[in-house]
Amino acid sequence: MEKIHVGTGRSYDVYIGRGILENVGSCLKESGAGKAVLVCGENVFPLYAEKINLALEKEGFKVFDFIIEPGEASKSLETYGKLLEFLCEKELTRSDMLIALGGGVTGDLTGFAAATYQRGIGFIQIPTTLLAMVDSSVGGKTAVNLSGGKNRAGAFWQPSAVLCDPDTLRTLPEREYRSGMAEVIKYGVLGSRAFFDELAGDIPCSHEHIIGTCVKMKRDIVAEDEFDTGKRRLLNLGHSFGHAIEALSEFKMTHGEAVSAGTAIIARASAAMGYMAESEAGSIIKCLKKYGLPTETGYSKEEIERFVRMDKKLSGDTISLAVPREIGSCDIIGVPLGDIPRWLSLGGVK
Ligand SMILES: NC(=O)c1ccc[n+]([C@@H]2O[C@H](COP(=O)([O-])OP(=O)(O)OC[C@H]3O[C@@H](n4cnc5c(N)ncnc54)[C@H](O)[C@@H]3O)[C@@H](O)[C@H]2O)c1
View 1 (spheres, rainbow, N blue to C red):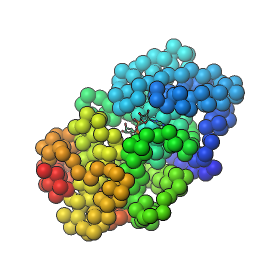
View 2: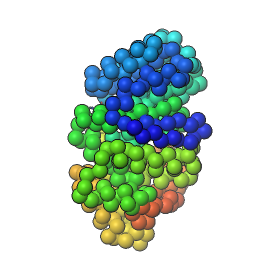
View 3: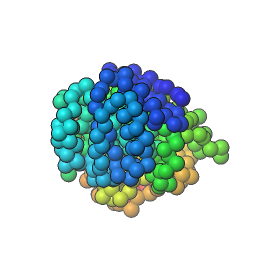
């Protein structure tokens, strides 16, 4: 089992290891909690919840299950409200715990409820998608969506621990696995050519290696910039256009698919602007394609621009774009909104 310490304001450990789900009881025992609410999607619940409930009950916890519908639609004010009412009904106190078992949707929703219930109670992330293991479960960004935009209501609230069991990926649908690979490739592009080369190469990497590498990279960035005012924006590579594409598809595209298309667009635009060699952009696009990810979009410049204007990375009339300079290195560039259509055009958007 690998243990990675995340040195944010409230620090915690990420545990990566096969069969780790059984350890959730001992992990929570240290917290001194008496009750736990397990939040889980109805797809994941029959697969792993019983094991966790039993492990917790064995340690003397009273566990209540809160089951949500799978999909982005559950990252809503409505589900969030119902969850808060459930916590009240079960009389959770500040010393009790929430547990998020599932993908990024479950983690973001549970984290936001934990951040705001009684002004903050502890929560544990048990990610079961590749995307959640390598990205969303670490770093403390929690949120729900509003009709005016994705992740518009949220808080920075670090988990008390993250337990990643790569064995849970065995049941993950292929499409969701590929979606997670978009975020994995992002780490290679923004911070490590060696890791990118491994991903682009012919020898498959183990899940433990992929998760451990990404978590350490995220840990280093988040420890330096917990509240997303500088370096952490690098993690947004592919997301400014990606979030727009995801919303335009009405969430029929997965988060990772949209991020993949967004990464390809920004890579092409960066090369066309002379920030990065054409061959580097070509390698990024080839690697995304290798994992069956989209590198084009059918949406128009005008459509994408409309959603980019709702992005949280907007400050006045300028948006912070993460732009690759070469594989393994990326810069944050302030781009006036008026220039976005040109960037999209150079990125191959019609
Ligand atoms: N907080 C952050 O820092 C951060 C970072 C990146 C993405 N996100 C958010 O994460 C969300 C996307 O997360 P996601 O890609 O994990 O999607 P998801 O949570 O919607 O999960 C994808 C699907 O896989 C199913 N599933 C999950 N684990 C499974 C398993 N082991 N076996 C079988 N089925 C399983 C789920 O029920 C769901 O249908 C988006 O809302 C995105 O905004 C947040």
